[in-house]
Image (tube, helix red, strand yellow):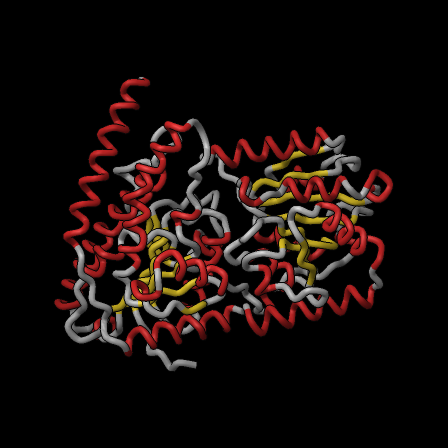
Length: 484
C-alpha cells in the first residue's frame, strides 16, 4: 500500500462506449474512487443506451465535453484527426472549468479540503491533450499536479495502411506521418507512462524508446471480484437454453478480433458433436461504426456458408426465444448482467484475437470459473496459465482449437472442470482484482508525485507538424470537393 493521500483525479477518455478500453477506464475510476479520491471522467461521447452501467447510473461523475464542433469522422475517414480535434476541444472546456473552480474555491473559505489535494490527470488511448495540460493547466499554489498516460498500445500500429489502391496507401502514409510523430512527442509531455501488459510495454519501448518516455511500468486491467459483483451460480433450472452446451466468444465486432476463427473451429466439430451445443458470439456493436455493421454481416455469411443456422438478436428477450435448431447466435452489445449469466453458464470462452494488448474478457471468464481458449500471443500469455486456467493455441491452427472444444465438451470430468474453475478464480483474485489494480495505480501515482515534474520542451516542433497537417488537409479537402 502506498498511503497516498486523497487527490483530485481527472480522467480523459475519447469515447465512453462499450469495450475493453472503456471497461478499463471505468475500473480505474472505481478503484481510485473507492480509495477516497475525487474522480471525474471527461469524455467526448457517452451514449446512455450504449455504455457501462456505472457511466449512467450515477456511480461515477461523467462529463461529456468537446462533442459539438467536430464530428467523429468525415465520410468514414480522418478518424485520428477528428479524435484529436475533439480531445483538444474537450481539453479547452476542461481547463475553463478548472479555472472557474479555482476562482470559486479561492472565494469560498469554507472548502479548503479540495484546495489541499493534489491534482492528477489520467489520460489514455489518445495523448493529444497532454502537452496542452502540461503547458496551460497551472498547479494550484499549495499542491502538486501530475499527468499519467495509460498506454493501451501505440495508435500508429493500429492504423490500417495496406488497404486500397497504391494512391490511397500513399495518401494514408502521408496523412499518418504527422500523427505518428505527434503521438510520441505528446506522450513525452506526461510525467509518467504506464502500459496495460508486459507485451504492450515492450512494444511501447520499441516504438518510442525509453529515453523519451522514461521507465514504463505495467498496471494490469482488472475485474471486480467483490462478492456482490460476482457472476451468478450455474443453476440448471435457470439455464438460458435448456439442453444446450454453450461455447462463448466475446469481443467487439471488429475484423482484427478474428471471431471467424471461432466459427471455423466450431464447424470443425461436425454435425454429430455440434448436436446439443451452441456457439454464442457476443460483443460490442455500435450502429455508428461501419466496421461493426459490416463485420457482423461477414460473420453471419461465413457461418451460413458453412451450413450453420444463425440468428442475430439485440435484446435479452429475443435471445431467449430463438429456435432450438440455431447453431450460431450473434448477440449485439449485451448488458453486463446478461454477459455475466453467459459466462456463468458456458463451457468454454473462445478468445480469438492475435497479439491482443491485454484482453480483459479472459480475466472476466476466469473470475466466473470459466476456462479460456486463447491465441498464444500478446496479453493472454500473461493472464492464462496453460492447462491450469485454460489453453493457449496457435490462431492459425483451427484443428487445435476444435480439439480443445471437443475436450471441454466431451473429454473432461467434473473434477477437472472444478479444479480449473478454482484455479482461474484464485488467479484473478491474486493478480487482476480491483484491489490489486488500485494498489498499482496508487504506487505509480505516488512515485510520480515524489519525482519532479518531467520537463517538456519542443513546442517549436509543433509548428512543423501544423504546417504538414495544414498541407495535407488542403489536399484532402480539395479531393473531397472534387468528389462532391
